[in-house]
Image 1 (cartoon, rainbow, N blue to C red):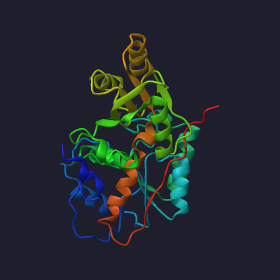
Image 2 (cartoon, rainbow, N blue to C red):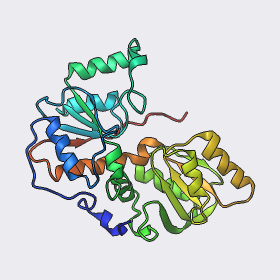
Image 3 (tube, one colour):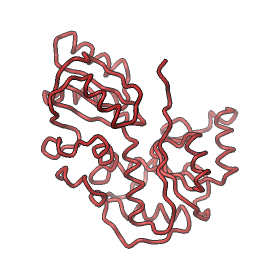
Image 4 (cartoon, helix red, strand yellow):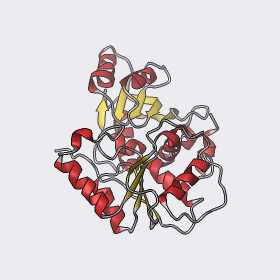
Length: 283
């Protein structure tokens, strides 16, 4: 893994070429393929999800989730090409066969078609490129550059503090009203692990098993796996806890970073990062 100081700039995880003027979404995607450091896979979720790739390009909106408020904001900003990290139609592969008579799907599809929007998912390759662009953005947002253990993107040494204190820091850094804590909020720790998005409960458990991870900051996870494991560990007197910040906020800064990266090689086209509104409230 490259040294963490490389994450301080926008240059690290892609090689830059001369700026170009894209005329269509296809032009943008071709440039993306040239600038990632990994080979483009033939089997990937990074494909068009809606619209005509040859549409005349007006502006680019970059987001974590292409939900209705985000699409409406994109139209308001004059953007007709949306680059989203996660699915558009409620499943990993965006299968819609079972939604053909669903009013929510139909209304969203109608809005996309009415506004001639083109949507492309950028998930696999931003994670596969070196270093992982989503982690780059999150590390910058969480101000973890100097806390990395030997340049790791997943392991950090922090000043001694309680889980409650660090949860408050995360809420401020990520713009959250609430977080979900599994474990003792008053537990003090210095060794933190980071697992963005939803890698699965077994991935969380593998990190938590390590002695150099006392607290795991995670996006989301199955309650019958991660939650149960940590609750058992706490009952056994082990120094373990998890702070769940939600899927969106655990990766969203990576797409903000992506928008800045795009500006480095796409000339004279408006590029906007659109932050997702919270997708749940705490009563």
